[in-house]
Amino acid sequence: MKIGVLCVQGAFIEHIKIFEKLGADCICLRQKSDITHIDGLVLPGGESTTQGKLLHELNMFEPLKEKIINGLPVFATCAGLILLSEKLTNDTNIYFGTLPITTKRNAYGRQSDSFQTTAHFKGIGNYLMTFIRAPYIESTDSSVDVLATVNNKIVAVKYKNQLGLAFHPELGDDIRIHQYFIDMIGHKPLPH
Amino acid sequence: MEKSQNILNRGLAQMLKGGVIMDVTTPEQAKIAEEAGACAVMALERIPADIRAAGGVSRMSDPKMIKGIQNAVSIPVMAKCRIGHFVEAQILEAIDIDYIDESEVLSPADDIYHINKLSFKVPFVCGARDLGEALRRINEGASMIRTKGEPGTGDIIQAVRHMRKMNSEIARISSMREDELFEAAKSLQVPYELILYVHNNQKLPVVNFAAGGIATPADAALMMQLGAEGVFVGSGIFKSGNPSKRANSIVKAVTNYTDAALIAKLSEDLGEAMVGINEKEIELIMEERGI
Image (cartoon, rainbow over the protein chains, first blue to last red):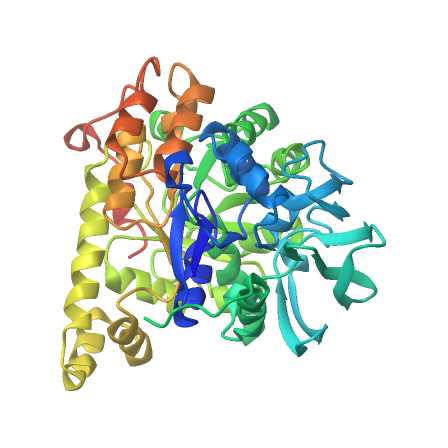
């Protein structure tokens, strides 16, 4: 199993380490020529304005968008969720826009409002979630499966091939959500 | 500091990795930086090159000016306080800054003690020239480290020296026998637990950026190839001929830091780089502040 990880900016190494521990091969996507056959795509945390800009300027935006539309499983955390969202309430930019949700950027405020909390994640159970200058999802299309809420705000969703989280599962050592994504890709990765 | 606060503070630095943090002095510059792809901005009244030129005492910026920059951009905003000046840090925390740089660029307020950063909720980044300095700052509560370099010069030599020194010391600690670590802790003047962490993980326990003297896409890529996890660019951008283009080229060079063909293209037609001052020509050595 080959997972392409968007490596233009942000906490991509953390995702790669976890997926490699789970037996998947990871490819760093830094420019268009890096995009070859991949079984899954990870959009990591970081700054969405930086990532969105680099996606366009390094000519990766169109090929990746096409792959997502064609059903490539994609796993997005924090800034990645912004890139997938169809609408943003406090940002005029729209990036891939393939996930029918409305998301608010920096929804909790600045760094002083960053927090950790344990909440239920559908299909997994209680999970320690780390929110850093995080967004939350204000509303979703009825076809979107809500996987987790914190204080009545939606923080994790699944829609067809797309898994989107407002928090950072890559910052802890609980690998169950990464395993969930591997299961979504649907076949067992080859052992190393 | 609570354990979870530590994860949140170090975590924000992890989100900045692979990115460029730019010094800005006005909301307009902050917007240019954000549009060029900066992952954060450092709000300050005068960039290091001008601090050097002006001389005198250099202090924390006017909170009103910092707030103007916070309102102008959606990316994280950092600001500097003087080494040891914990009240300036309290003020920056009170205006909800995302990261504080306890910085040798400003005039030190204390020649012995750094700020007890463990007593703050807001994260701190500190400069370091070697492993000992870095681990002492981390022990005081820093959530992110950067090389000191020599700010405001456009001369990369000190940042290179600091990064190489840090790497070689990490390699040396990593290859030691465990019974040698106690002596290493003693000679570096740092707690044994931090030395043990470096020994077991072959890295610092926090993110390490390059800073001080970066002026070109090639400088930024050089620091990344030497192991930096991201870069700060201070005077290098807004002291140059075409700030927007230079900023954007440095951002792309940091993402693709091993692609020489791309960096060659990014280095074309950038206009004039900051003039720069050679390390031998400067009288004020900022890197020696706060060790």
